[in-house]
Image (cartoon, rainbow, N blue to C red; front, top):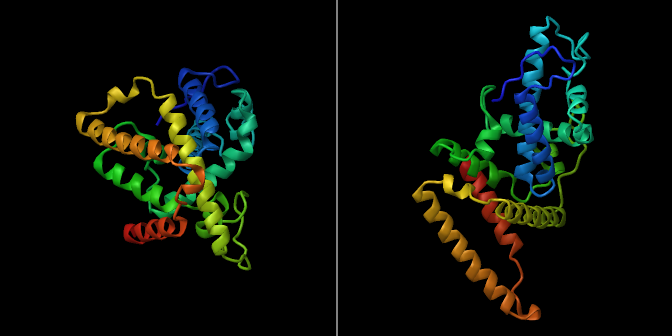
Length: 251
């Protein structure tokens, strides 16, 4: 986790703070393209909250409001100082879902959810957990995650409405299709921006990536060559059942 330390300037503009701001900006842009990226944005928000809490404790203040002489030691103030206050509402919602995911998978306070989801060289346990989380959120919308394991609205300390009805099959299907499209966009966006980062992988990881890439090229090429009326539709229900089975198996 990057560390923010109190700074004499009122903007907390340190190299680490600027790096975290850049990460949040980049992750905010990606958040609209996939649920995992959205949760990763929330994980960065949790890092920010923890680091600002450290700043407040080191200035001998437990207040959640602006710290005297250092108003940037709050999430809204920090975001404004780094010119990303436009992300505030989305960031708070992402933080709530990230907290719910940590609770769902019983991750301790020291667990770095961002590293689990986005780390370049995950350890075997981290990779397995990443796959479980990805499977768990597949086909779920933000609201489904808030309703299913948290609260229905992004309000800190909010309570779940017991009268909330579970999503219908049609709603679940629509949510799965929406998430599938967003995840596909996120994947190809990441591939477009990959550049030479793939060289950080070891040979075993590259071999798996190549097999997946070749399989995709074959299937996508055949799909494009097939006239639109003759293309087989996506078996959404079957894929949803497989995801749910994997989710149950993960528990």
